[in-house]
Image (cartoon, rainbow, N blue to C red):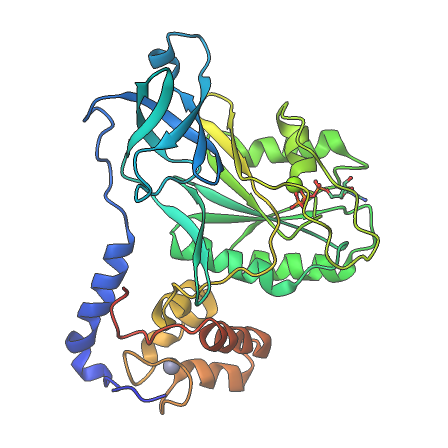
Length: 340
Ligand SMILES: Nc1nc2c(ncn2[C@@H]2O[C@H](COP(=O)(O)OP(=O)(O)OP(=O)(O)O)[C@@H](O)[C@H]2O)c(=O)[nH]1
Ligand SMILES: [Mg+2]
Ligand SMILES: [Zn+2]
């Protein structure tokens, strides 16, 4: 990998593109919903090019939000679950005319395509369990996605009724990395699980993610009256078959929401640069400001304090290898280049 290294003394030269990249990621704040015409609503589900929109109670003149089917005006209008949208009515059906600027947009991405997860989210709840066997990296990747979007992460170990010593160790590690953690059993202590979830989800928008079969929908059914379909584990074991097929937003309380999403396996992060990654990994962020080069990718560069910390044992080898893997496998661009 060839790149021009920037010694720390010339920080000004390279901080600029990094800063610009970071700023461009932040979406326009506070552009008011008062602007524009049309009926305001929230996109609560998406089925390809069709959407379910919960119209605001005021607009629908009903006590509760009315849900309508809608299509987007033009294929180029990107609409995601969680979006606030303005709709018009045409021949009795609803058309999404515009999307109110998002607070944030969570997505995963690999080299070929990006897949939006949800918009306007306050926190990610990462659900895992001892069965099906979790892929430890999944939670780390979800934590990175949360950190890059500047939202918090809650790590939920479900199915504590099963033997889960390895999963408990993974949970401890996530706590050290900054996640709030919960230990739940939807099966043997549903009331306790519901109470703990309520504390975490009240007044916030929480996106539930996790590999298939971990119990996301089961947990949400305890919290809200959604009657989400839940699935038995597939006989073959390792990957629970995907039971939930669409991402679905549910209002929770007066000002919160919970979002159920289909389980997935590969949490691609190709949209994160080396700089984003290192910034989002707390143990890296603690030492990387002392690297000799400001755009150090913590690979082969001389004077790298991240590698020094790995050598000392202050940064776990598994975490360093994870960092290298996300960078290489996901084919990230170098940190000093502005994002596309
Ligand atoms: N033993 C045990 N099983 C549970 C628990 N919670 C959920 N399950 C079971 O795990 C299986 C999968 O649950 P789901 O809620 O469908 O999992 P999911 O994460 O929504 O899966 P996808 O929709 O495919 O992403 C079901 O058979 C549940 O009954 C638990 O606390 N303990
Ligand atoms: Mg589900
Ligand atoms: Zn370094």
